[in-house]
Length: 464
Image (cartoon, rainbow, N blue to C red; front, side, top):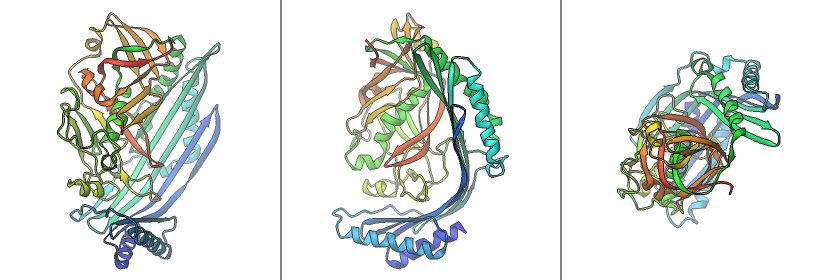
């Protein structure tokens, strides 16, 4: 049914005069649970369904969506999108074109053993309570363990006038916990997350209790931390923080819509050396079990393992059909939308730095005084200026090649290109993390990954 509805919407758009059209129809069962201080603030389960239709007419876009899958409402949505495109075409100065693809027809399935739709919300709420208890039972110093559980399962259909006729059976589940510890007047917190395209069996495949307990263990450990000095030091970033750097500081600069808009420092820098020759970075939608993985993007383009930086040299951007046409390149499956209610835009998937040759001990041994930074609790990035600032969840002073005093309130900041040149060693380990990326009021699941990396002369901020 979904494919039929999407195809009818596209056919209606072409009959109205569209030069290109694509439609996405969805029917997804979803659950959202928020647990705070052992109290369920939200526990919602239901079906989200609808269709979004995007139309290109005389170089201008029009978009409309409907929460109904009835033919009458779909026809109205197509007409509304066409009217918007037609009205906009009279005002736009630069006409939009898209790169047309070869026709493709496919059915994609995420294999699951325990379908999420067969697990009642009561069992999911019990699981959330259990995870919270695991964290709180770690120590009497844990005063709260707040948790979010999310899942979705169902079907998505993608149809385009040039290429795509794709039906996807999807299933994904996520749990994130934030453990808060207190001793006297001192309060600390740490988070851990688990997520994968899977069914409820995920919690048998991954030692989730251990992950939840780790959040509590890290929060309690921070109670012993001391204020950090500021200045320029040698820094080792753990895989989570290094992965955030790859995503936020590099990946966003490689999104081709930002490049075209003049909002990326990487504009016009293809084949230029941007950093150390030991640094290679990919954005890969094909990672098996990756939180940001999909076989096709939301324009129906096959996704790829996209090489962004190879041995310090900029090799590529992340594209949708529009950006590829504007830059004379090929689409590489980088168009994503939060749901049928949103238009597809250029987005990352799983962004990572490739491993090197060093153990953590080897990275540490040459440092007389420096910092070891772990994970991230947020920050700020400006792709146009090429600046970043991340706040580490944990930190340790490094003294004479050994991890020493735990530290509080430590940030890493700098210039993206300068930092890429300052990476002088990369670990041979490799870890991934899951999260959500926001852009233009849309949030999509993404993965970050990296080995440990060592950065020379990095700007570290802390309390004086």
